[in-house]
Image (cartoon, rainbow over all chains, first blue to last red; front, top):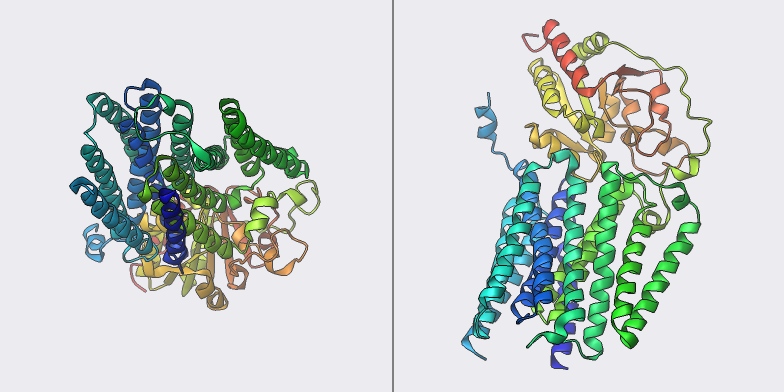
Length: 101
Length: 478
């Protein structure tokens, strides 16, 4: 039962941390923040990875783990890149703007 | 504790810290981009942590390695490709798609453990109530996230419309039925195993569809944000299934932060979460009343007249909307405003919190066209300035400039914060035709005496405007 009680504490503290992390968000950042948080929720790739590693010789576990890993990485890599693409547009340096003309 | 384990704990701790800093940083304009990278690094660290731990437990078999490489390269490359190719206008549906895949991943992990871990030789084993509960939660939330996100994406893309039955009260009964079915399935899972599991997958996926389908396009961002929060919960549940602490922390963090973000977005749109989820599409109430959707006293004018008025103006406020984004006209718009600025005319952009299709969407699109960040003004800042404005130029925005929201308490839009463009001396509305906006509601603004309609595609109109302004000599000398 020790994993369970530990895990429940972690769940509680993690949730509290999450509630505190975001306070006031300027509307400009709603979309990027959502997209970034979405990429992080792809952390479930760790579960997929664990599943494959601990699968032993079980072929169905390997296959389902691999598909799951694919889905998760699609979420993670796509999510971070797309967030970066959005945010890159905010952080243009003024001198670069002059350079365009 | 072995050295490997200590090492793994250290890595996990660092990863969690970086993730928290990443989420925090993402809510500030200045630090957002670095924060996003930080979060990405944290995720990579967490993967290293899992690998280190498994080396301590006797390494990874070549067979497992091959499957890992296969899955991650296919998913990763597709993700990379999608992220680079997708146009900025399609950002909301892209986020929905990614999110759905995250939910699918959690769902698959739980399915894998539930169905096949009996033949595995170590670690993940399904026994005891805790495992079953976490599998149930993971499957339930994962399936809702997946089906809901896919429906949200399809609706935003225009592949799916809102069926009329979903606007009646029937949908509540249907959704409650799916909910009860999921509960029954979960109980079956305890008693009989596999059959209950499949029933649970199907019932919760249908529930996701049933809940998302009735929701109108304008509310979709809120739903995507909520589903994003769910995918965090699904990840945390998957963490319980495979016994991974970092998964639980990260999942809980995203789940809670997503909930807050959803609330913040609701506030920005002056909608409550309950009315978004259960109120249906806001246009539903009036869709049947065809009266009051006909326009009278519309003044339309040519681009030339518009240019003449602008030439004489001192202060111009641009109100960009989704129509601008669809026409990909932000770059032409930037050219027009450059000419106006060179002519000594003060130009600002009024950004409604939900301009575009998602909060902040319009800011991204304008930033892409090199519009200086300082010129983008939020609604609360710009609204008091409209009476001192000579020209308000409305480009493909509709519902967010509808005065009904302020004046007509019977209007479904009533109470939504809008931009007070009608206070400006002259208002030009660039629009392709007289069709209604996202909400399907008539816009009283178009009938006002100081409003003129300029019909045409935003990009074409702006291109013509640019030519006219240059012919008038605006920006040469004044």
